[in-house]
Length: 510
Image (cartoon, rainbow, N blue to C red; front, side, top):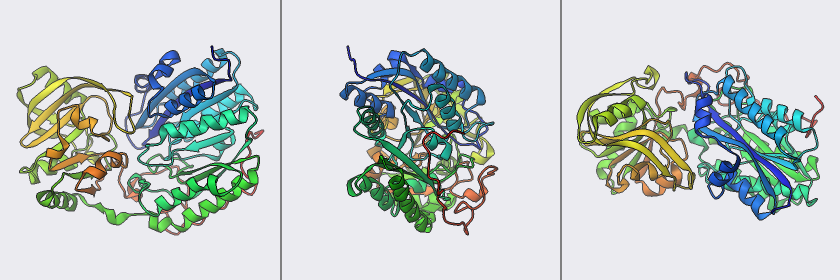
């Protein structure tokens, strides 16, 4: 039996779109949850953060003590009941565990609830109050985290994904776990500094292959190699659709025994980000609805490969803006729309059965801001329960459950309707329904950046369309209530960051 250090492993993650009317409830988190031995068996070897935690602990001779791990990706704000339920479970499982030597935790960093603008900070405060100031706590965050200084002050070190698409989730877990083991073995004394930057970008502009963001990420990656004493550096882009006082970019640097060094390097990179703020906005890449549909249509007529039409503002995978226009204006092309979220349409198709033609309302619950319901005449090509193991770079090894689902044909267009809200980011979304990407003229996606890992090399071009939905690139149209004044580009005359001269204490007394 492994007799190494005992490390608790858990996760409670959600990227909250604060403006969506539907909260993410207990049942949503339960659907994605794993506990105890199931956490280890189900996530070891996957591309998840937990997969990285577990691999590093196994390689380092440590014992993983599984708590609870749930990740609901992007959805509406967490209900306060859901937050309290999983906060309390994490606390209870920690209390019931035998002696622990450390805690590894995955939090997204952009969760909100109706009553809590910084639930991750609330969670870390509760954990620290129970665990005391001395137990090492290391946290992995999403690149789109809206980090609060309080969260940074409550953990020994924090680590973020370097890339969007998030192809390095497991690697981020490895970084965090290796740092924790190094601390326990006396090989490192991690000291953390966090610097906030009053800047936030629409998610589509946070693809880390876009310059100058790519150059800034490269600088953060180079820090541990180029600056003696730096253990790790993370650049966080923030999440524009979570209404929180902590919205926006952050830089986190971990140094070995030298908090002043960590702070100096974090401030330097934060200043570089601020100087690049105008260039980080790529508004020229975004089309209006009519212009975008026309551009995709014209390109598809001449292309040798499929064109990806990206309706990035759709946060629930149920917008009908582009689908309606494509049915009307591109009826002569072969178009596929994967993962349209409509449980009622999926159930109707399942009851009707394959080979049936029937009138359907797609998006029965789609709000007018997302285009409203769409009435169609559809043929059911396939219907059933859809479950499979993911094979893409971000979902490798994960169990995917779409619930009741169907493949519909509407003229030359096909639409897969599913009962679980998730984005199509890899070829699984097509191949699981028998769709050959190469045979399409246009593929309609609703991802933000994650689709690029698979589809950008395969597509003829990518046409980005903005709509009035809750993920719009026009951040000025969103009804923010908690975002402070002076955040660029909401305030074009925003001021540069003023680093806290006190630095970032690890465990403040208050």
